[in-house]
Image (spheres, rainbow, N blue to C red):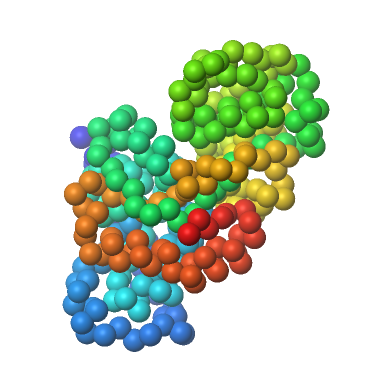
Length: 284
């Protein structure tokens, strides 16, 4: 009960701020007037939880520039970690969220006894290796320290990147979601530190290399494509693409279906490409 009470207070505070901000935001100049038919179709606002960048920015673009044309009102609740957006959904504080890829969603569902369902893929946050000490992974010395995400899905992506770069070998038959326990060979005796994803950027001064997903780099004003000393191989964009998600049984909510459609509007693709310059990739 302590968690629920604390979560409620945090959520209400953050949600109120988001609603106040939304109500004070200027109306988009080019938005088409909302018809009475459209307005009546979506009589209740659609509430969503997100992480701020880029998901929150993309959703805010849709809220301000595209949703009014469809008669859809969107309210946004932001969190700075990977757990709270799903927990907000579980607690009923929101109707859906927009911040996660399928492997993360599936693992979270198992860990927290949730039945989540993802809709269409929207954008991809590339994962890369970054360093304040070296300019190439070939410069890593014996015993070097590398920080990686502590969630199993993005941690697995980090391990695959290290394997692709020839720094480690995973044991044969490793499951799709690899962990440090699956490392069969580590010739440079690399020390892997598993830490929470939002803290990876701050770890750069304390480690030789940090492997970070693109959303946190963008939030810090960096560009994954330009600043990484190594990037994960292409090919998994759809699997690791960020999607709108909700509790199973709610996916047919007309408001959720409409937002799922709006997130694939060509203007969203244009917004992502212009704003993030390759650091975030639209996948539709």
